[in-house]
Each structure stands twice: as structure tokens, then as C-alpha cells.
Length: 102
Length: 102
DNA sequence: AAGTTATTTAGCAAGGATGCTAAATGTCCC
DNA sequence: GGGACATTTAGCATCCTTGCTAAATAACTT
Image (cartoon, rainbow over all chains, first blue to last red):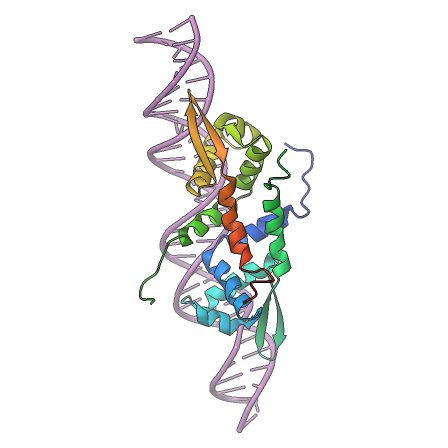
């Protein structure tokens, strides 16, 4: 039993890696990116065979992970990819780089 | 319904991202890496609070994902990290790089 | 060969994730 | 303001994952 556990960006890894663990969510990110970085929820959902509501949940997971943000525009919501957040993954990978090999 | 789905290295992404989705497994990789790239199952398990068997399963998942390999040495098994396999993650991230910005 | 050490496999319970349908919310248009 | 459109929230069933304990395998030791 550890005295006290710190949870600063530890949770961030958890959220991001968790979000990327599902093929549909990875595909959502790619889809939005190749569409210029932003799409409405409807456009995104249309790409998938899933029910609308299922995609909505995936979007929520991605947003909670910080990989997506949304803004309202009238009755539609525009989701925007947060490329910067993906660097967290790169950061984690960097632990395994040649140089750091200690 | 798509005509036919190809699954070449698609499954590889699935396996690797799936494996990295669990904090314990990410920690196993870091542990082995910072221990010089190889450790026995026992040494790895000793690092965790989990029951031995639970860690064994994590090792299996990581191995199935290609992130670890093992070789027998007497009655112990030495697990070795496959850094190269992590590049698959880097490859995926590369889709979002500035340059490739379609 | 019997016992000890190192590790995996099997089987089960609990919790979480995923996908669906139905209902709710919020906005636009006549 | 009433209906159509865009999207989310709720609730439920199913499946997958994780963690555990018990049992099995396999290699060393005496």
C-alpha cells in the first residue's frame, strides 16, 4: 500500500490510451483529420455502420480523453480534432527511444 | 454491409493498441525496458501487487500483440521487449503529422 | 522419485465496455 | 407554437476484461 498516489497526467495516459483502444474511435480521429480537422456529429456518424447513438458515445469518450472538442453551431455540433493531445502518446513512446536507453 | 473487409496489419493495430490500453501492461513494458530490455516472468510479477497469475495474463496479451517475446532458460522464462513493434503506434500517429496533412 | 521452485492454464465472479432502442433536448422554419 | 431536423441522454442486454484461487506443467535438487 503506497502512502499516496499522485494522479497528474497519469490519468491522461489512461484516458488517451483507453480512447485509442477501440478501432471505431481511432477511425473517427482519422476521418475527422482527413476531412480537414472538423466535422459535424452527423457527418461523422454517417461514416459508420453503427447506430447514431453508438457513435455519439464514442465521441464522448474521445472528448473526455481530450482528443476532440466540440462547439455548437446552430443545431449541429462540430467536432474538432486536438492533434496536440496525441503527443501524449508520442511522449510515452519516447521513453523507449534509443537515447534514453539507460 | 461492405463487400469484403481486408485485415492485414489492421489486426496489428487492434492488438497493439488493445495491449497498451491497460496501465499495468504499459508499466510492464517500461519496467522491462528500464531493466535492460529483458526480465524473467518472476521479476516482472514481483513488481506488481497483482497475483502472479494476473501478471502472467498481461504478459500473454503483450506477447500476442508482438510487444514481447519470451525464451525459456531452464525453469524460468525470460521476456524480452520488442521495441520495434512499438513503431506501429508511431506509424499510426504519423497519419496526423503536419506534413502528411493530406 | 519426491520435493521444491518457476511459471502457466483453467475456471469463475465482478465490473466495464459496447451496441441497441426509446425518449429527451435543443434549434430551425413556417 | 408545432413539426422537422440534429444530436444527446437513459436504460438495458450482451460480451469482454480483469482479478482471483486452484490445479497443472516443467525443470531443477537431493
